[in-house]
Length: 407
Image 1 (tube, helix red, strand yellow):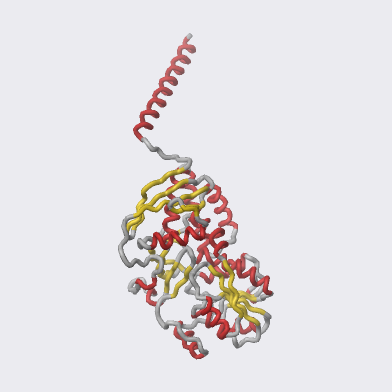
Image 2 (cartoon, rainbow, N blue to C red; image 1 turned 90 degrees about the vertical axis):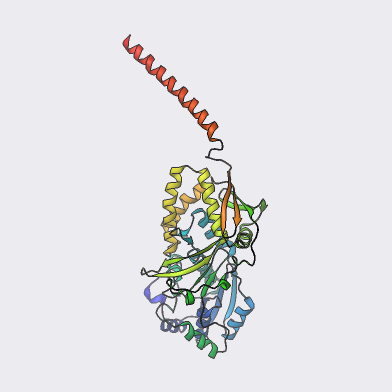
């Protein structure tokens, strides 16, 4: 993608709108993507607002109201299966956490969104793909990187990379255009079936942030619940059942989010670096991600050789780094994935947690091909006898050799 094909400002967007037949925008219904439709409503080209459904609970009637107001065509694509199979499942195997602090999310979703957007653009005949990430959002390099790696030949990028407006300025313009209902302050959120994350507004300053319980969906808790056990079954690295109930992976994740989340398990907070090294603060809730990655780690520890696990951990960091830096479709992540997925084939068994308020304690690990001991006393007696017998046998052989040489 040459520099002349990049969309980085509203001036670039106006240039592109005059030279294209059909623009595809990534649309969420939030302030940024709605303002983009408002700007494009004054252009003389066809606009399709693409929603990639990753199970974030969107109000489709509201999305249609917004697109109709600005003369855009709404198109909804179900991306849940692609997201789970191509991103979430590999993330479980790679223990994909940012510096070991919290599960990554947009690093997983943005490449899938970009891939489905490129497919939609090809089908619809769009010669531009425009998104709304800005320089304080890592989605900027992840979406741009994915679009480049996927070989999209049209115009693409975000006009907010170089054209910056406050949330209040965008809301004021939208209100003037007849679209009301956005809050002037508060947090900005990004949600999918794996992680719900919140940033900006009252969370801007990590030294003094305000966190409202109202932002939580999965981990809100009205009353204390009794202790309860939760068993997760894995087969060849794939989560397949909760408490012996077989479930498709999408349904398993959804159920686990609400079930474990009701114990307030899976809340995270932490900083993340931007492309230039600056850090921004984010809050997340990810009950299913927490338990599935912890459970998988316990089970692979119970199954795989220690040296293999050590090498895998080093490759996990490469896998996560490449995803975070927007190189999802690059060769290095693919190579690391090959190693990690090979180890996953050996991981079969069940991990049981004991849930209590705010905690998930390990209660049982049962591997199909275990490397662990279940009776240390019996093992010590057996190994002592085996090694002692071997030692006596070796001494006898050595003595026989010495006697033979003397003769």
